[in-house]
Image 1 (cartoon, rainbow, N blue to C red):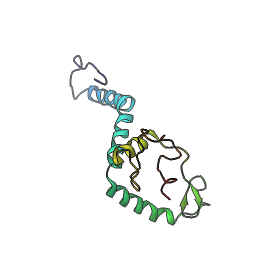
Image 2 (cartoon, rainbow, N blue to C red; image 1 turned 30 degrees about the horizontal axis):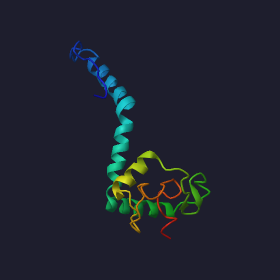
Image 3 (cartoon, rainbow, N blue to C red; image 1 turned 180 degrees about the vertical axis):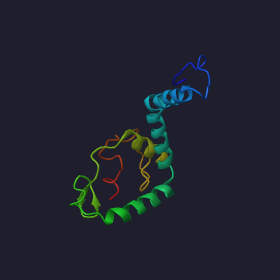
Image 4 (cartoon, rainbow, N blue to C red; image 1 turned 90 degrees about the vertical axis):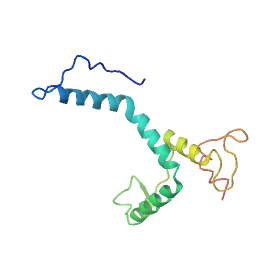
Length: 130
């Protein structure tokens, strides 16, 4: 069980703010205890669908191509080119590991650390599959 809140002494009454109070308690509980878990799981699930990712990336690239570095200096390397991230979030690593079953999707190389050391530098395996 993730958490527990005893509502047995709360009575439902439209004339007071009990329902609103309960909704606020639920929202706080969700944000403090469940949101991070749900977000990680949703991204893991989305990462497992390569067709979705391909279409999502295609649509994003169409928007990014039209962006000007002067308007977005913090995220663009140059006009229409987004900066590469310097870290990989845990949800992203989990999603890619789940999706690709710890194998490079280009060459099939085992990335499970059984035969190689998985690091941020070779996580996406681009350095090995050029």
